[in-house]
Image 1 (cartoon, rainbow, N blue to C red):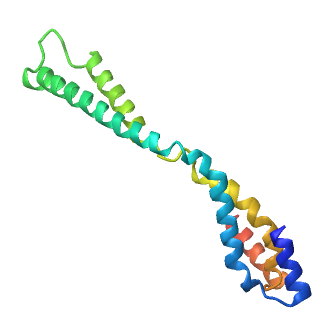
Image 2: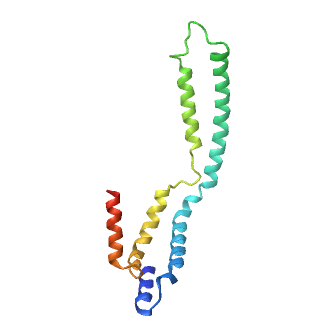
Image 3: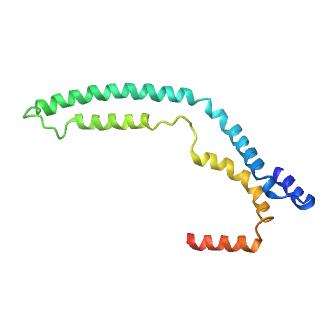
Length: 151
């Protein structure tokens, strides 16, 4: 609706696209914020969970690594019990994997691609407005060149 209103003013009232570019961008940003804001409610809780998880897994990893070091490095293990084939290494790897999951927890439960799926539909109606400042032939040449470079 906004793009058609701008187009109407450009074609019939002689206004320029440059007069509306910032307003359109602000409007699009407001709509993206409105669409994304409900998931931002979870951000404080996710940050608290991440902090708590890092602290808890850090303490567990520290204790486990000290015990591992004491058993396998300081005492060099017993002759009958070799390092390979024990569950100690596998447990240490599993603990590190769990720690990485907590470390990678994002405070905002959306990805950039989610924002792009909100932005692109807002930009598509504005694309024909570009034709008011860029001739169609120039735009087609640029698109063809872009397609050739991508191939």
